[in-house]
Image 1 (cartoon, protein in one colour):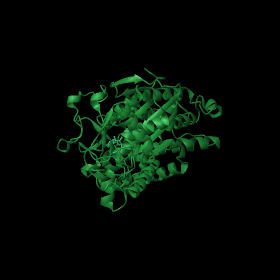
Image 2 (cartoon, rainbow, N blue to C red):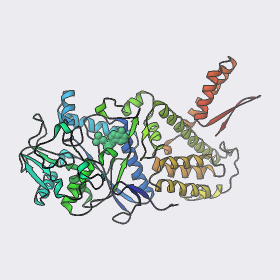
Image 3 (tube, rainbow, N blue to C red):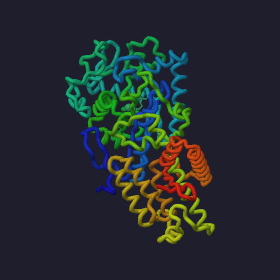
Image 4 (cartoon, rainbow, N blue to C red):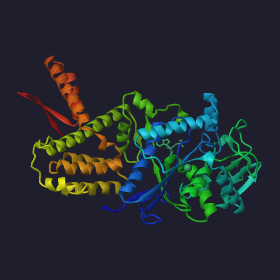
Length: 496
Ligand code: AMP
Ligand code: ZN
């Protein structure tokens, strides 16, 4: 078992690999960011949450991370390749706003969502529209290297001149068909070629235009990531992330542009998250069904309930969204908060001489003195063992479901003192990001009140012979992590 090694699944080669940074203890991380033409849907937020876990995992493994993310505010067409409508333009027309206003509005909305989900902000968030000169320079260099050609005013990447084209996508060129079949661009020498710079586009009303050596126009979508990542992270990047939908076109084209111009391998590890799906369908804006973080909040969920829900699935497996499974995540998080609140209560009580621990009913712990007087890193024997298996879980391609299981095992462990438990839990939460450090004793008292209320309701239901309601409440308590048993003296709650 790897405890100290971080293994990641590299889409470029499709295998698990030990993570080895370019520079010792430093990581250059680039994450493909949002196209700001609408609110992020919860599928998009799944992607950003996993990259947040990636960044926090890297920090747990003692790496210093420089995290860069782009904001696409120009040029993203609806089919990811060179056809379809311009997403920004279409949204501006629909909402009767300028494209600039649309970009500004949805960029702010995006960062608000990110903050609410406790996702760490990238160190650099760069807008495509603020990096047009860098993109033009990249196109010039590709033309100089004869990897691009000008045809009828547009500049195209010449895939025939780049033998490695499609390496990561693992599909032979003959099978890779970008662009919709009805919308083949006659100017392309090869159907796989893609636009680097548009001057003659389908979009006569394109509002975002810049002067270039090839005429007034705008960049192809893929260009921004190649240009901005090099500007902020240099010519070699450790990790580049995105959703699996980006493997075939966007990232394939990014690799062609960057490696074409740089003349060497560009990204060492490509990490792609699987999709959040609903009813076996893609949760995409183009299919009309879009659930935002705000819609979850309107249903009474906390953004961190959704974060907890995401942590319950491995990033490389599809996650099926349903209100019921989100409800389960909410219950589990509530129970987690309660346990952490109780731990804090116990620790307070012991400090003030109270002494009886509600976790174990015993105030006499081995190692307690060590834990209280020891350093912040002193997790005690079982805490240290748990942290080890927690690290091992994350080290195996960021296995968050297993890491969560470790957290619960720790909480249920009766041989660890509250102090050791709490410090270990808070250490784990540096990766989970569930804001456990801020759980207050009052929160836990609030939950105590809710538990009592549930117990009362169940008792009333039982007295009235309403066994269905009584059973439902018992199940709710079970989901919250409490087993209720009926004794002659009355109902008794036991922590699971
Ligand atoms: P976009 O704003 O469309 O460029 O998407 C932002 C990020 O979300 C990209 O990395 C996509 O690959 C990712 N993404 C899109 N849809 C989903 C989904 N349903 N589940 C998970 N990730 C998604
Ligand atoms: Zn990108």
